[in-house]
Length: 266
Image (cartoon, rainbow, N blue to C red; front, side, top):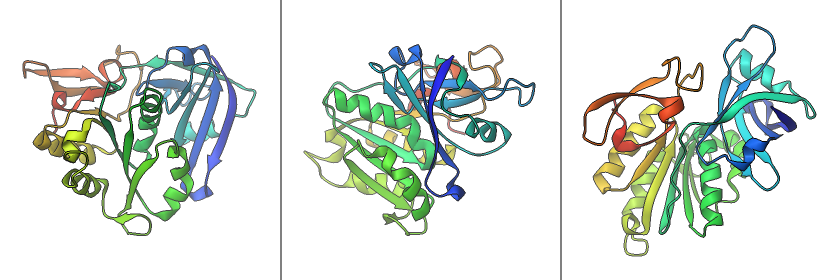
């Protein structure tokens, strides 16, 4: 259980973005890239919990923050919860990101896929590891609502498909141009690791670029999760083990973060 401290909308109502902050002992052990599985109502429907990535970790203060977008009945019920109410959740769950010991960390986000990367960038900063965020969004209105959440990452490049804010294009275009620019001996030299989250086609393209550049990449996969603990197998995803053999992995337990080369990109 947790105690809700904040549950507020970000930006204009039509963006449907919310920040939820709650107190819990889970903050003491949470790691970047993990998630919490939230029960949105005591009623029978909707039955399944909602998995939300941990976006900010205040271990000393015992607080966690998650962000979400209204998409249906479950998130609508979640948005109605108020400060002071109890929050029924499981977590922290899953396998998180690797924080590099040196070099520069490249964060690659598509839309609301930025949220799982925020705690990683924050933890890297605490360890003296600089981060660069490449972030593609829908339009200017989206960034007006969401851009402030990444203010602790000092170096950012933003893009929108319609060109209304930042560069015109996709985050994959930002990645290509970024890696082509010499930076401290070459971008691929300065950047030791990369992490990405966003729509599946975006992750597939990012993985192909990283593989060509021999850039170590971890991806956070987004999928429907029923139990959140690996029992129901509803989130099983095809992958490859260290020997290259085909395997099925449970995103909720074996992930949601995977080395990109261990994902079978379909």
